[in-house]
Amino acid sequence: MGMPEGIKISSYTLDDLLGPLNEVEEKYAPPKIFVSGDMPIPLPSPRCAVIGSRKASPEGLKASSEIVKTLVKRGVIIVSGLAEGIDTSAHETAIEEGGDTIAVLGTSLDRVYPQKNECLQEIIMRNYLAISQFPTGHPTQPKNFVIRNRLMALISDASIIVEAGDTSGSLHQGWEALRLGRPLFIWKSILENSSLTWPKKMLQYGAMVLSDPEEVMDVLPSRGRILKVAP
Amino acid sequence: MRLTKLDYGALLTYTPRGHSVKIQDAKEFMIALKNERFVEDPQNGKLVLMSEWIAKTIQRNITTLPFASFFQPNTILVPAPKSSLMRPDTLWVSERIASALTKMGFGNKVISCLTRNKSVPKAASSEARDRPKAIDHYKSMTVTRILSKPEEIVLIDDIITRGATLLGAANRLADAFPETRIRAFAAMRTISNPDEFNRLYDPCVGTIELRESGDTLRRP
Image (tube, rainbow over all chains, first blue to last red; front, side, top):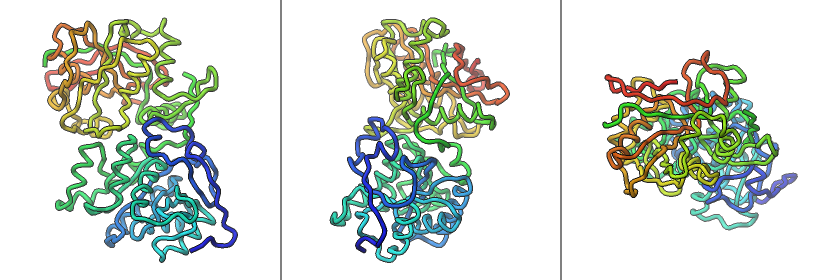
């Protein structure tokens, strides 16, 4: 892709973006984050990841769109990975609905994957926010997308898996969200597919079934990370 | 189960219902507690982890707290297991609170000797009829490490709803240590009726009782 004209990349630490991290959050936190876009730093809250299959079904895409519409109405920033399928639908719906979105890339900010999302990535880099832990020119490798999923879990106050097979990359994010103690939701229709093994396992480790997107609001913070307390 | 009644103490309160500013503030605090976030200590403006803030707040107010006697020099603090299974390196808020308390001089040490071997539904996100009972918790936990006759144990949890987790856990410990006095502490207690919610900081001592139906009754 190269860097489109007028787009600037800035580097931050995760503390700059999110505020101080606890020990569990620090474990896989990258030392530097590269960002491009138009969003205040530290990042505003609440932020919720909506993620899932690259080869999404029409039902999955519809569910993703409905979930994002509900969350955007409630002022939630939609985080996703700019992959094909559910991720693309999540970003596009957030933009169409007048909301905010953050794309967490598995490539450096000067590259694009998949190529068909070049235009969407540029829109996000200009008007919303694109984030990568990989410096400009960093080679794109499959493992980067797994690492990216951990970062996406860390950036999101909660994560929703809308549709995913047993080998989907979204599962890496799901497990990391559970490790971090962040709410992880599995969209209800995933449970209808009895051939999948991962949903049952993740439910045992603390994931929750999501039947109504409004339920997410119960677990999302409404403010930034730093709470002032004076009991 | 041996124990049908358990003494407990709690520092804070929140209610899941209601929309007043006070209620929203307490809910925000509950989310920060569940995520072990940083909070600003109003006494010195420094950022501290929520678990440390809980321990510091207890230390500052120890002379007036009704559960102060729970934390004796010989008391062993045992974190209550999460409702789900847990992989290594997972955030375990109860354990973080227990560790922060001992660092501040409350209790002798933390021993994480209770583990969950089968997940149970989360009380906070379940309908009342689906919430696991104390016996379900009891059956889903194991004591993994035998202590040498502790005199006193305080179970530590982040949030208490009806107390079923703590009563189930206390019974599991009572099987292993029948001579030991067992009590419980939760950083926060849930109040289901928003009209009964007064404020975030509302320390109390009370009891969790097992009813004939198998449900638990928490007072207050």
